[in-house]
Length: 412
Image 1 (cartoon, rainbow, N blue to C red):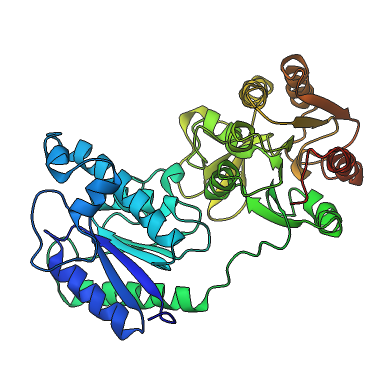
Image 2 (cartoon, helix red, strand yellow; image 1 turned 90 degrees about the horizontal axis):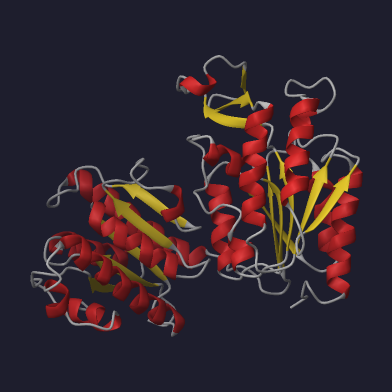
């Protein structure tokens, strides 16, 4: 058993007994050890799970009877989710489980995502759900490394369609545990945000320099879930510092874009006192879905087609001021050391001289708003350069090295 992947299977055993028993058999056939956690509330299962609904309630600091007495299915499941998360985290900490596999509809998926979020990065987390990839699930609810499978034909009872998906999920989680390479802890980790190198190029200069200083660099693509992942890790203290240079997700959220990392983007590092250097990369535009008609607000704008997923509309000078205000308000709430670099010659490749989004008035309006709102203890550094110039990377490294020398950024 010690050498076999130990998988926690989560579901409501009173309504999904056949499915859970089937999953247990498939995990075992794939070479794993299956441990079932019953997160149901009302009924009693026809089999004995390794962790009962009473164990889950106890982990939440209550009893099953008290959960039932709450009187509402939402209230009961929120309490059950807290217990399941606490119990799963304890099981992972003491080596009882190596991965999790949850099944369910909307309510059990809600619970499963909370449990997945309680488990550390590197622990395989699979959720087989009837609402996988649905717009019902906001980006901020998705844990950094969760893997979801749609459960077609799985609302009630086993059939050939649902067995196909369940068996794949069982094999996938066992294989993920067996084949995983856990995040290394040999070097402190730096989190950086960016768009692709055709738009923001500073990572090409900074990656070798950061690594030469003894750190590992992880770059997050700011297309919604990338920024959400970075924020989640920052809140959990995963980073020695954050280099947050692509803030387009903040402006996207301000203007109602479908591409959003949630309302708390640019707040994770600051709320956790993680040292952060910030710059407004990409805040010349709003991202739109190419495959949808643009919102009425942007219907009369020139639309730049990036690819078949993402299109962009240029922000007006007034909209850039709105974006600057939102960014400055978030930065000023930071509890930890924060520096803001304002490149006065442009903030993405498209707003260079001759570029499609060049707008000197808009850029100056943005810079003026930042200048008026970013104050001590946040350090404001204005540079007469473009964000893609080497001068920007050199300025970043100057602050980084200063913080290394005075101990603001720790080597471990």
